[in-house]
Image (cartoon, rainbow, N blue to C red; front, side, top):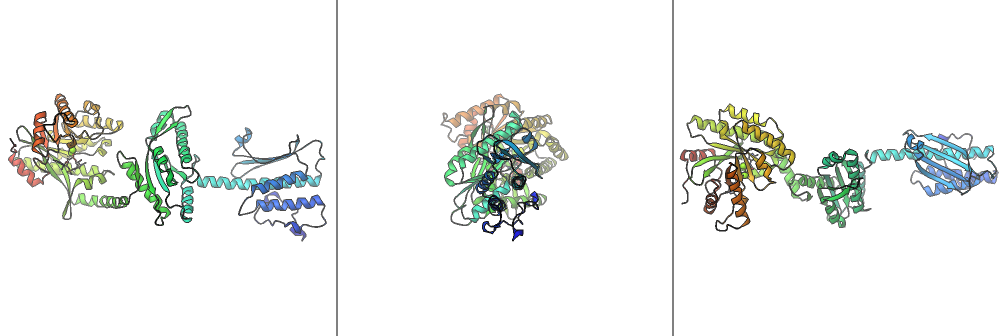
Length: 591
Ligand code: C2E
Ligand code: MG
Ligand code: MG
């Protein structure tokens, strides 16, 4: 039996606390030991047992045993501290773990220190009142043994903490994706996810906050934003950072309104008390109650909703909808088919005439893309927005330009009257500084005069885009191309857009065209009248889009807008039909 009793001499500190150590049951202690020896052995065995329990670490139990041990050895105080690094130790910061203090003043009688393999430090110190009987040699060894055991236990647990932190938290201390997966797996596994609200969001334009206040303050603002939302969703929810300014979270559905309000707009203070507004793009998914939802499905749905929120123009908060999957499949299909379709020449221009409403003369046309796919003609609404998600749209626009130039060269060769054609260019091109040269190269290859090509751009949204657009437009004008501002009035138009960019033409969107010529005082009528008049005074050509009726034509005439484009005269036409219009050169007017 003797070999089952822990032997102080043979035990090296690093062996203590390993899983191999066998704890001694109380009743198996040797009967011939002194009482204090016996008590110590029992307590020590319990201590080791508590510290090596693989299921649960009962901190209270460990502390109570240590307090009893302190009593046996007449200690007035025993303190264990841990430090994350040596600097913390030098500055005396650190964290106190176990502390026994009977309130009596004492002197330090023993001190031990370890540096763990992850460079954290732990110390333990024991104190005794001067009026107590000092420790004898045997007692000293026992106290030393307990202290080493405690240190060994702490450093092992610190390691576990550090490994846990590294695995489940990122460098800035946010819980990470692995943490999220664990949480969601548990939730789904315990069937507690039903009805909850999952979300993924991104802080919009957060780089501007970093730029304005500096990165360290940006980090603090981001953390404050995160922690506030964490407090809103409370204990029953969970949030992690995916990286950068991207986050995911889950909470009870009764928090939906608060979370949406917060993610729509929240004010966060910088450390100097300056309030900054934070906006997000967020995708939400309400986890269904009537069926089982897999962990991956939750992430898939919030990402799908988030993508729509991010690309969806004005709407920055989007709830997942079954149609997203359908849309995603459609998007992928079109993106996959695009290259082959362009090589097979399936994208071709239709031409919609532009007509002078005073004379009826055909003055130009807009080239509008049609996709001849199998036996169907696909309208642009079905593929342009998808191609605009990538740079595919740029390839399509240049392909259209090339098709138009080919037609124009043929018309010239056939001796037809020269006619100006406009081609739509996506805003995606704006970052491409070589676009004017690329356009000129294509146009010159077909010997088309530059003034017969009109480049249509829609209004720009951001300031950065505005500067790029201005540079691009100035260059195109200097090369002699015409330049139209398309769909004027429906984007974020500003007067600077007209003032600072050398447009030749302004195309008023069809939504700005009044329906009733007699209603001169409606907002639309007033706006239309002033836009047309301003365009004229600035020396720009004005075209009204969506001219469908006789009334529309008379509104244009009454307000001095000379050029119309719309179904009243013609829909976009195939090249053959358009050639017949060129041959005619004129439309008959209704009066
Ligand atoms: P957009 O450039 O504003 O072209 C005018 C659109 O209005 C055309 O639609 C045209 O068919 C339609 N429209 C013309 N007259 C009327 C009318 O009287 N009433 C109504 N309700 N609509 C009329 P479409 O051809 O479906 O093209 C839609 C949009 O797709 C275009 O708007 C343009 O933004 C884009 N798009 C078309 N082709 C291309 C292209 O090759 N490249 C790029 N980047 N975008 C293109
Ligand atoms: Mg257009
Ligand atoms: Mg338009």
